[in-house]
Length: 212
Ligand SMILES: Nc1nc2c(ncn2[C@@H]2O[C@H](COP(=O)(O)OP(=O)(O)OP(=O)(O)O)[C@@H](O)[C@H]2O)c(=O)[nH]1
Ligand SMILES: [Mg+2]
Image (cartoon, rainbow, N blue to C red; front, side, top):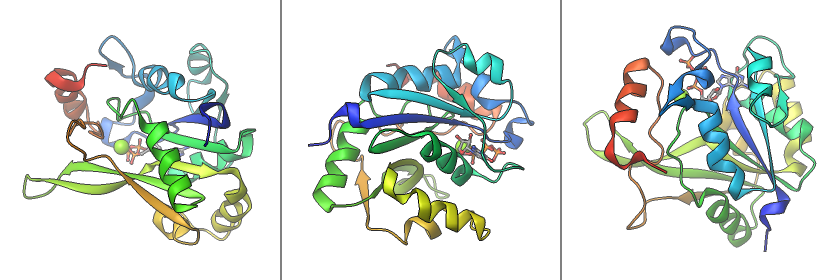
């Protein structure tokens, strides 16, 4: 069994936030506290230790009480740059990533992701969960910024990004991987709701079933 102590949680807060007008998204308030702090507090009880990946306002992120690491790659290379940064600083067997802008993620994320890793003997597990499709219906889709990565995949990720690779699925496809689906009865259909714009963030705050 994989113990929670074998997992380092990583909050991804290193993006441009362009759809939010270029603000530092992790610092935008959600229910009275910064999004990234909210995500950190939701992940901390699930794992042995946590760290934050951010590229701006590093002093503010430092104040959240977990180590802060800016991207090891320049120029906002995307979420894989966050994965690479996290794996580069990870001293546990596993790294579990969550984005800062989906503050309602499952409280049993780590437990179910590690169970999926063991069941499939996978070195990479991606979450899958409901999302509102273009036709307005809920569809279960991969949520690839929610990733459980075994530390052994670091050299492969280094090589992939060094060759210019930026797409998460193109990289994960190179490894034994599993999908962990969060669509059981009782699972929150809003668990992976994502605030990319200020309007989406306001809507997320007003949703009734997003409380901890
Ligand atoms: N470290 C790092 N993380 C990133 C980067 N780009 C996106 N992310 C993170 O990946 C997750 C998903 O990002 P998006 O919401 O698609 O992108 P964003 O940059 O936050 O916002 P947009 O610029 O509006 O796309 C978020 O947690 C981001 O913080 C990057 O260049 N570096
Ligand atoms: Mg997003």
